[in-house]
Length: 253
Image (cartoon, rainbow, N blue to C red; front, top):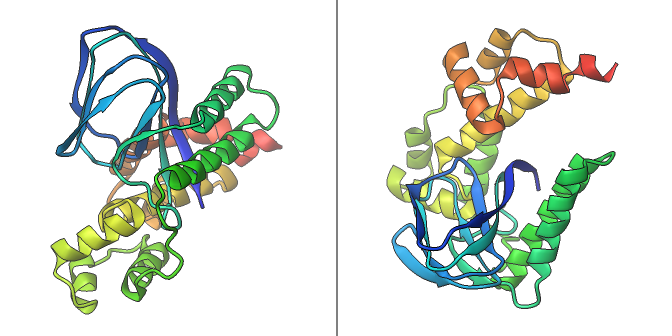
């Protein structure tokens, strides 16, 4: 399971306040430490109170209204979760396990001790596992062969121009139905999954190699460098150049 933490915050939201409908490029978990209010995720509206948490899939519209002052922990991340599906919804943390893990993540981010980034990924994976247990989601051990084929195809050819409409037709689906099945399986639409693969590969190339950014953008399947730079910054919070300066191989010498 590959996980990338994009955003993590703890904040106190004022009573009678509202966040309008919005989306994220990754999964979002919002943990309500206390307080009460409502959140609409896609077309379903939920009432939250203390020790509840919401899950929103990439690209899913959601909002939030606080009736009372609410302490919130929220994080946005990208993850290949074909093993443990994360479904939209509001859930309860019965014994506080999720809260404790998120508090440990907050502590690691605050002190940033040696290897904190590795521990953060481990804690995030543990959060995902615990959510799978709490929501009683069965693991997908024998997924539909067509979806496995489609996923492997995108992972192998993400750097090339792909005909996803043709892929759906080859598998015997309309594209809309294929998109629905694929998103239910991976959490991403086929195109979103391809973009995530391209961004992850570009991140690795920037970290481990010295290829020019233009070359990386082409090899990873982006139309041009400006498109690549914009999408990379949206995903990782900094330009490819700045990412290489901070994490590249030259910084490790």
